[in-house]
Image (cartoon, rainbow, N blue to C red; front, top):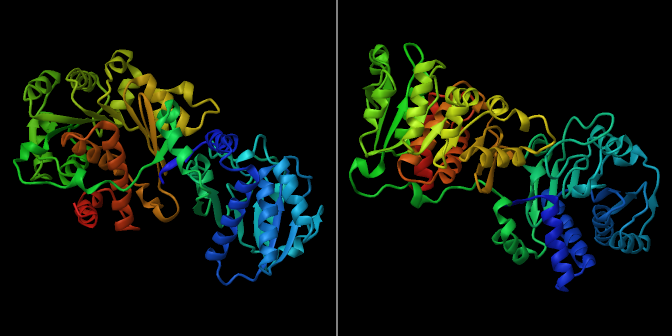
Length: 500
């Protein structure tokens, strides 16, 4: 399942099922507790059969009472700390069930944490204000005691909608060891910094697939986020045909000594399967680029007029403009000419800066454009979105709607949105963490991958998603020591592993 839900979306799904009579809140809590118990036993098959459950006053605490009861029935030694009495009907009911088996402690003895699994059922996705120190300190005591921490739904203190930490007086230095959530991942599991504090993530099916599907198909489905998934082989494989059947990409380059980024993008576009790729550069830079390129073709483009003439060829199917381009009048005119062509375009690096500086250029952006800003470039393009409490997801959605093109906001938690919504998130976290992508030129390769996919006729949002996945997969495959030059050359191995 690839949906990534907000807390409100998850609550709406649960409420609809309960109101329909298909299931009760108590039954959902029972299913959740059973899923937690099964998951933690699978994750730690040789656990010491000791647990400390930390319960809050809401339904997350109710899940904790269920877990405490079930583990006790399995023969575990369980202690339960609840500094605040339960306040929701289902949590009250399960606290009463627990009371028949064990005692609820109002004071936490840190000594009891050592040698136990610690289950965080304090606040979960129901967090509405910063967590007080007495609560997150309990988790800190567990870490100091070297006790594994299991978070139910989400680690208490992380906002389930933004991934931001919401706590008073500090917070944990490390996250959970295991997070167990229900039916679908939540935004706070994949948006930073929460995504980095989640630990291993397990998603437990509690029988809500049908209403979840209804949400994604309904009017609000345009704003249900999905995880960027492994691309289908059919979109990447080649059949017999002519090179022009797979498109012709133009990559615009800067002047002498500034062609590295464009060369990286051009090689990536060719590796991902564009039939032809031409690097367009000023005449003075032709020899420099010729010395570094063979399969990539070259064309003199001294000014916007020369680019317009190049675009007279209808076989040109996509452009990449920005890497190493420069910020002068020539470059601004090149961006304008590229946008006027209405071809699919990747706008990166210097092109984004030029658009941020010029309202006229900004107005030319169209729905076949893919903008690939990092956080600094995004702030220059949309300063009003960088100084709000918006999540990265919501900021990207608003930016795409404002600019009228696809926006790909880069990071370990890359967010991609179309002008009409339909956001996707690629979380390069946990088993897909690729910190070595933090290297000069890696973004130019991503721009080239997306350009090559656009040249092949893949729609902008899909090209952005597939390019992001391939970019991270290539880095995963190469591993530490990666530099940007390595990325295009590892793409064939990625494609072979996909079966393309």
